[in-house]
Image (cartoon, rainbow, N blue to C red):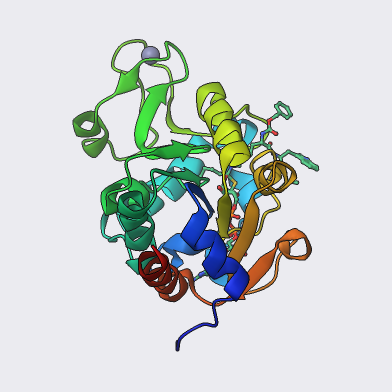
Length: 249
Ligand code: BJW
Ligand code: ZN
């Protein structure tokens, strides 16, 4: 994709901002090869995310839910951060306060070098026991072929992710809210912005005075509330924003 037009308004904000926050969803990892949830390619065996990402589904059919997570864990393990993740990590060198709030469980922001990352929906690399709550090691997980049982109490092991109907991790949520409230500029990147409470963060940021810029390949539920919408793939747009920010600095 060619160069995007960066408005004078955004250039001014990029020049003066001290607190910059990126709020990301599955779309930022799409160009690394991680399927999104709601795109046509995102459906796994025709299941909607709501049908698999909930505790009831897990208890009814742990093998099926584990098959989905095993497939995704293996796929994610083979991917690399893309130019979008890397541009956000580089912004830490440009801005005194740069944070990423992510709904993704794929760990690609940390692998790209971002150090301030708030994971709202957990991390697929961690797993814990539904019985005794203990975390199990990656080595243990690597030896498992189907729905694993806890070596300690024989309870079912689950991924440390947030399913529908479950609370978000309180600490990550509180830090995300205060980060959103402090942001001079908030980028909303690659999310359909339909899953709450995460989807309320751009609105919280805007009410607190942030300049909110959405980056997505298509318009979303949030687009009409954004100060600017940049349509296109984030792996192309974010490096251009970084370049502009560095030039303006
Ligand atoms: C690109 C691109 C490129 C592509 N460049 N862009 C009714 C109304 C309001 C709320 C509710 C309701 N009924 C129930 C609720 C609450 C519910 C909810 O929000 N449901 C809605 C779906 C209606 N929320 C919850 O249950 C949450 N908990 C909660 O509310 O707790 C309180 C409570 C407690 C007890 C009882 C009741 C309430 C928890 C939500 C957990 C979500 N979990 C998942 C799975 C995580 C684990 C895993 O990964 O397996 O999180 S679901 C899934 O959706 C995942 C994602 O993080 C999340 C958001 O998806 P995301 O990232 O936006 O992806 P997509 O696919 O939707 O969009 C991709 C976007 O990228 C698209 O826009 C593309 O265009 C774009 N794109 N390529 C730029 N190259
Ligand atoms: Zn246990």
